[in-house]
Length: 424
RNA sequence: GGAGAGGUGGCCGAGUGGUCGAAGGCGCACGCCUGGAAAGUGUGUAUACCGCGUGAACCGGUAUCGAGGGUUCGAAUCCCUCUCUCUCCGCCA
Image: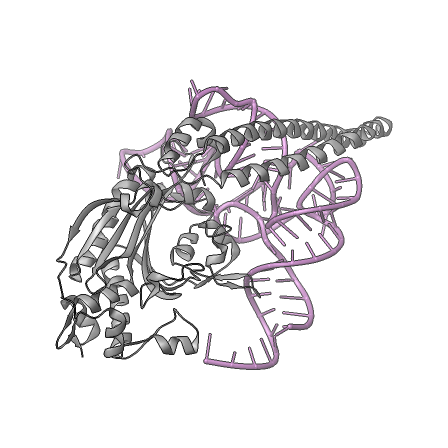
């Protein structure tokens, strides 16, 4: 969430910049500004009443000590109306604060100045691309048919055990999953990311911390008995490591990587693009999370993009990197790059990673701060994250792009992880 | 799941109704001392909001001793609820 300070001090800028996200904040901002004023007035009133009360209480204590019972009792009588007033003011203040907060969380993060204006994915800006999109002709099989042909992924079996969107990987298919996970983790570690293996189930506070709650409640699997949520991405448990934390300057950069399965209900997304591995309820992903000093976060974002790009190059997959336009960006992001790989049989670009700088938007919710060396002030840190990478669509692209008459060729870098060079 | 003990600042730890955001110690920062260091010594060392206005410093106010509520003129301290941790028992990978 944006800080009230930002909204208060730069209200016009907030409105202008949110237009890039096709968000008209005019009315919200003015309501927030008014409520903020009211809130502060209430707090001042309450504080001065409390001050009066505290002063009075102290004097009563002194009077008793000095044995001036009569004066003490007289003073004591004066407190009751004051007490009522404090109670009333504090109640009003709490209501006001809550109301204000409910409005503030409706404001999306401000897009970075470089974000292109646009309505949908069609307006995204291609940054660069790499690899070769081969034309495999009309007899090229989509990955779900290849998966069946080589008996490496069983979608039907998953339906029996759980339901649609929970595939069973087997044989070389299972091995390929494990190879990719290890490959990604190893590469991330070489790039300086500390590996963590977090819980796959989180509590409510964590859900709020990274912003899944309350908005996307319906997208997560909920364990009602214990009020836990299955994680939709490793971002949730990993970023929440740093909830309520005050870092020192020298702690930067914080770099974590984690492999986790991810669980998403994907409510309402049934339809066209859910075939095969394109959209699942459970999938594997390796995530990178970074926390940075605000001065360096954009530099860091570029480094993360370069890192993810190298992974795709090593996997010899045709890819492109696009900068999302305002209309296609998430609520919480300030700048997002999407990575897409070309899936040669589906003839589609599949999103395999999304690398974003959230600036202080998440940090504000998380109360993730750092102590500035020079000013000694505690300031909000910047958070960034990205997938490196999401497995299912990588697998889909690998299967489709690398199909040959002899079988599916495994990229060279993966062979030491898989232990085989071809799936046949 | 049953029984008991406990949760105080970055850490340890004192504090059972009054001037306590909280003794003392450790750690940390800065200074003095030293040729340099150690030791010693002095000072400082939580967070948030508000006053506050263009920002910062200072200053002042309020809140916070696991969380929420209550008693009281006044709560770290008394009462209630919740929560978490530890120990023992049970169950178990």
